[in-house]
Amino acid sequence: MRVVGLTGGISSGKSTVSNLFKAHGIPIVDADVVARNVLKKGTGGWRKVVATFGDHILLDNGEVDRPKLGQIVFASPDKRQLLNRYRCLCTIYNSGIL
Image 1 (cartoon, rainbow, N blue to C red):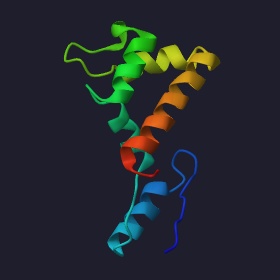
Image 2 (tube, one colour):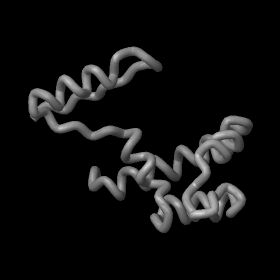
Image 3 (tube, rainbow, N blue to C red):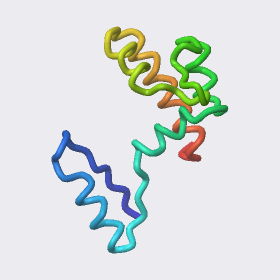
Image 4 (cartoon, rainbow, N blue to C red):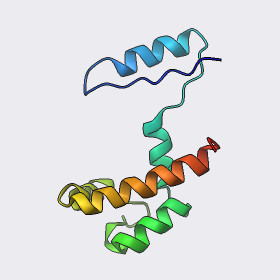
């Protein structure tokens, strides 16, 4: 089995190529979807992020306020690196990659 990584900048055609793969029955793992799932309420990733950044990053329904968290991490390279480390570890464990 071949594994292909599809990367590119904004509006570079990643979604178009991904849809072509899907149309031909090629399984797709969308890293954006996996990464969002890591921060869903109640998950291990959610708990780590809330413990690290505080409950002020939560919406009224308890989900992570992604724009608010983005403002925090894009203002601080150290905080961004910390978030990426959590998301990467949780993504790997939750997806069954390891």
